Amino acid sequence: MGGNLFATETIMNKKLKTFTAIPNRLLDQLCLHGLSRNEGKILFAVLRKTIGFQKHTNWMSGTLLENMTGIEKKNAKRMLRNLVKKGILIKVGNEHGLNPVAFEGEKIPDKEVKKTDSYYVKEMNKHGIAAFAAKHGDELATRILNLL
Image 1 (cartoon, rainbow, N blue to C red):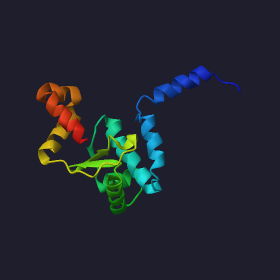
Image 2 (cartoon, rainbow, N blue to C red):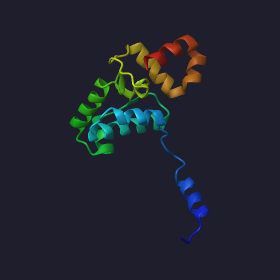
Image 3 (cartoon, one colour):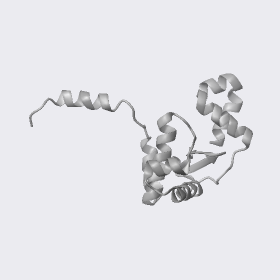
Image 4 (cartoon, rainbow, N blue to C red):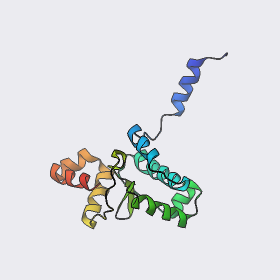
């Protein structure tokens, strides 16, 4: 085994500067959910577009999901709805994101967030939780986080 192992590791570290950090507990729980192959592809696309961009939710079009997964957009949207029904994802207005209690093994009922709350969720995604709490107060920030 020739070669410089340190140089290879340095090159890999430079290439891996951008990544999506998925918590181990979440991955462990998702293994238990019995997802279909296509549901798994859609879930990872959603994780990439949410966790990968430090957002709680994000807008997922059928075309975007088709481009990311190779699944025809009508089927991609159906898989997205299935993941919401299973309690793995949530729908907030027109956006989707990971159900924050899914990795704790609990299934919560689907809930559609009120339009005013949807606005606050978008604002929290855009500016971050700390900035949102500073602007709107801890009580509202906590209420919005509890909706997620």
